[in-house]
Image (cartoon, rainbow, N blue to C red):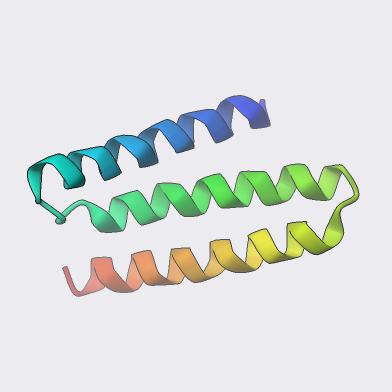
Length: 77
């Protein structure tokens, strides 16, 4: 289930990034960051399940930072 969720979030993130790159329209960047944070959160959960607690902590910390950035950008949208 986590692999499917990670793959889905990664595809959505890549789609928003590709759209922004090809059209020079960056108004969907906060959504791209939101899905990238979701990808990192799922990866952190997977690492925690594999008993790699240091890398899991780094991924969850980065996820929280990306979520904060995404929500802050959405508030000033």
